Image (cartoon, rainbow over all chains, first blue to last red; front, side):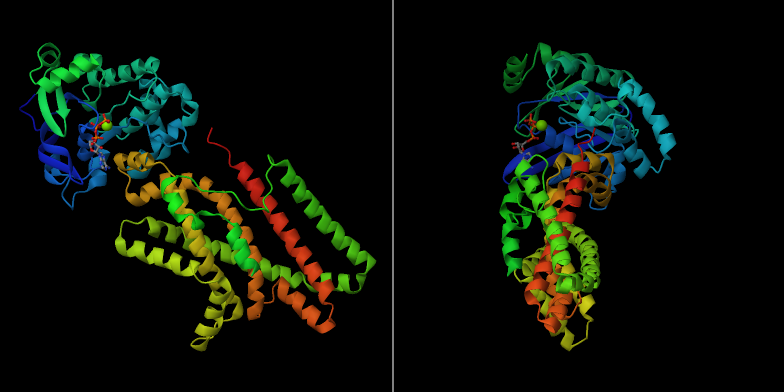
Length: 246
Length: 277
Ligand SMILES: Nc1ncnc2c1ncn2[C@@H]1O[C@H](COP(=O)(O)OP(=O)(O)OP(=O)(O)O)[C@@H](O)[C@H]1O
Ligand SMILES: [Mg+2]
């Protein structure tokens, strides 16, 4: 797998909020079809890392490349780059003024100039995939949290992204709905989707992740396979963190 | 001076600049004129005023047709002008307001400062003075027809107020909406157009309705610069017949009726805006 070029290549990246280093000298490569799960305590910079990848957050130092193009370059075509990066948020952020179907078709119609009928034709299989086809004409306010998140995943997939970024996709959900969202994510992983996931669902990490990255105070403190992490984590902070959440 | 009082009554976002920064909603408190179904007392007050005004006009015209009926037949031209001025000004000020609101939210320091300064300056000068300024002061360089001057003054003034409403409305939308749209690949403008503004519209509608009614009442000021609106027509009648009491009683009743009528329409429009479902 490592012979191919990384989709995402992060080198020596820093991000400051005032004097606080939210990201400190981050190096990370994400290869095609790789699944990386990022864990770490609150405020450790996990969201900032994910948001830096699609430049919802600018970076202050270092380089961050997606498919070889520098996203932090002033002339980077961010809108184009973002079309290839699907993002799923903790709070879903569905468009409340659009139906489920319209949530999926808005971006393809407006950005890829796909005719409406064709966009809808492509949206229905995605709704099937996330098990929510019967709600196609409902507005998001009528959905449960789990359903909303599954729609949000389908909306991101509708742009046919090369990689999916998930920022704690299940942490705003009631416990009984977490499973249905994780199942959708597992299916995606099985299909070979490249995924960068911030999540504290350790079962998911164990089952799906190729690599786990542990962050603390803006740094990547430890990285390795799930086995490594759950059997013999090296760094004392990793050990402490895992003992708290497991 | 009624203008100033009424301005003070309205606690629209323009008055609560500091507040809107933090609390993410538009205050819609005032608008004594707009009836609300849930508020039984006000609803009754609306009916009493409305049917009272109609009844009184009919009564006055039938009991004392001279001069009341003559007045009633004399002023409709003015009502038409009042409507024209209101409609043109509201449409134009909505456009100016949208641009101003976007400017106030712009990350570009120059655009932001320009828009903010415009709002600040306009809010600091009474509408009547603005009206005089455009008609008489600028009129010393290029003669502006009174009707045009009236539209420009009202647009400039209400554009600033509308700008504040648009700004607050756009500001009230969860930043997560922008992030979701941007992460899909929408540009800043596409995000505004497809995602933010459609949602902001419903927050904006009630205060815009208030402005609409306030503007209609403020159009009476343009009678001073020789625009033959309702008030002007009334004055023309009164100065020739000396029926000041009768004329202005009727003019007041007609303004009241128009405002009540409009507030009803605004109210109906607001009730049409149901949650997305
Ligand atoms: N826009 C911002 N302005 C200022 N500080 C910020 C901003 N965003 C994040 N931070 C700070 O940067 C640090 C990293 O935040 P980040 O959201 O990346 O953490 P996280 O690992 O995702 O935490 P959580 O598990 O709570 O989501 C935190 O200390 C946070 O307070
Ligand atoms: Mg986070």
